[in-house]
Image (cartoon, rainbow, N blue to C red; front, side, top):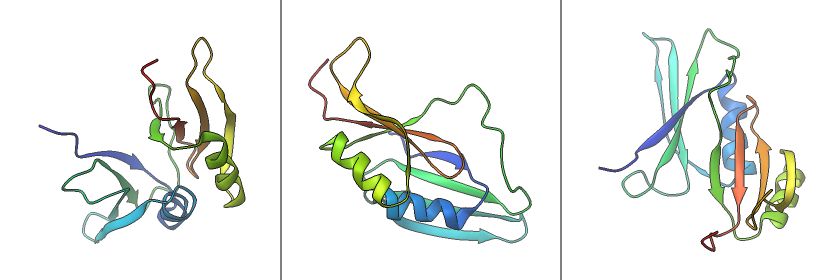
Length: 130
């Protein structure tokens, strides 16, 4: 078994695809409209779906936004340099909601950014086992 994808419902598909590809550097892997169901699926990620877990962005044509609820946590992405990644994300128009720095009660370096729908993405330095 392996994890295939995580699905996020998004209000503005074009804005979300731009964020994940242009700001976070993912690739749009595939996209398909389902006119009878009035929705579109777009898959983005850092590598092909055969070998990597990806994000499925689901856009229901008649739903402009969603209540994120209080059960959702975040997506985590490992980056080589959290500080540099935050600067690049800001320069690309992304929103950093927790600046890069050490984790509270730990030594991992992390930051949080927010996508156009308000989903949180944690940026983590490579694991050192702590």
